[in-house]
Length: 111
View: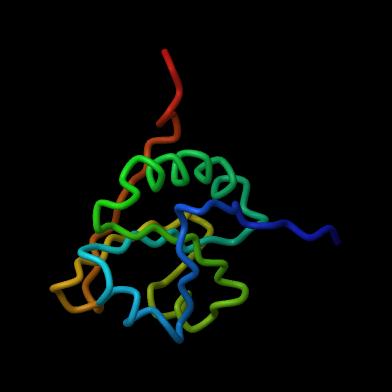
């Protein structure tokens, strides 16, 4: 079985179950993409997600792609599935009630 890697970008945070609440407290908002690296639909969304992170970098909003194979607790907590769940957490609201988001797949494409 070949290893499938998550995208890497300086605009993405390393969020784990152990630092989730801390990262949320450090940002006005936190956007998490909970995904399985082998999921084709998730892979298609990666480019748009990284572009969104780049566009708002430094604006108080943190972006992270979470590999739910490794971060099982976060995956279960926020009901990750192969539907590429993207959630917005506001820093001043309880982390138990995130907002679901949709990232347009064609974001960043010229046309």
